[in-house]
Image 1: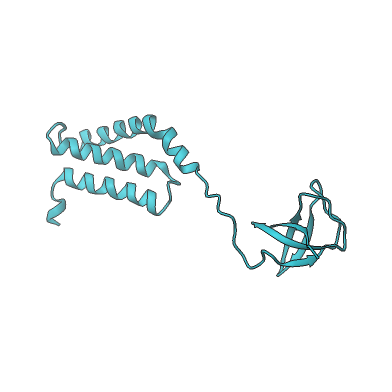
Image 2: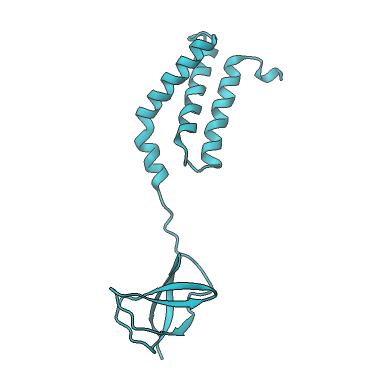
Length: 151
């Protein structure tokens, strides 16, 4: 293809592509694709402006060095960005559902409730005795947070 006939343009295109794939497809799960992509982009720019030779050995060394430099400079900021977790609460039809407890539960000793083929862990911020009708106030993965249902 005529657009990639130049080594510098090819490096820049592949560099951007690697960074985009890491962000969109993997969600920063593999930081090394972003680092290599940035290194290839930088190497391509330096070749384009005539600062670096387009010989394969120089290109490989430059990509390796720039990858290491970017890893040193960007590791902590990218790692922090990678560790950001969404705190959205789970929305479900089960919120507001009520049922009767089959065992006593407390903060220290959660119970279980079998519903829809799943053994849910039942937690509460207070002690609730067996036989009490409770209402689901919050859901997490495999966990129902309940409170006694108001009569």
